[in-house]
Length: 116
Image 1 (cartoon, one colour):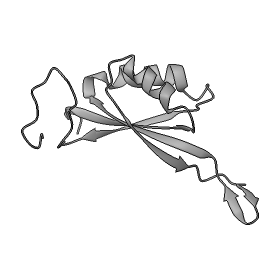
Image 2 (cartoon, rainbow, N blue to C red):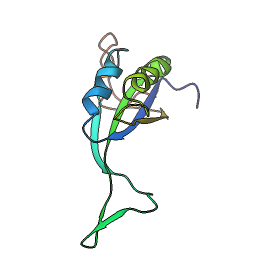
Image 3 (cartoon, rainbow, N blue to C red):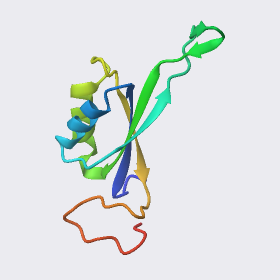
Image 4 (cartoon, one colour):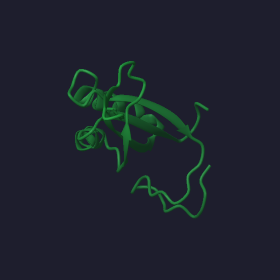
């Protein structure tokens, strides 16, 4: 799957840093993204308060990008919002095999249907 045209970046960060992440991604020509509210799990000693687990609040930022831009965008995000920052972002990427209904790049022709 290395020959896909697009990649999906999944950035997981502490809550409140999605703007910083998107600013970093846009500095390397990424378009928009989608932010999903999430909670961290897997903490061995998750704190409990009145029987309710107090898991760390997280945000997931999903960004579809051109494959050739992936390394630059990932580096920009890690430089500005990586594990050494308060955002403590981690990133993974997945190949995108097809799209429908996305306007990914302004310099390309509008999609007529599903792109593979």
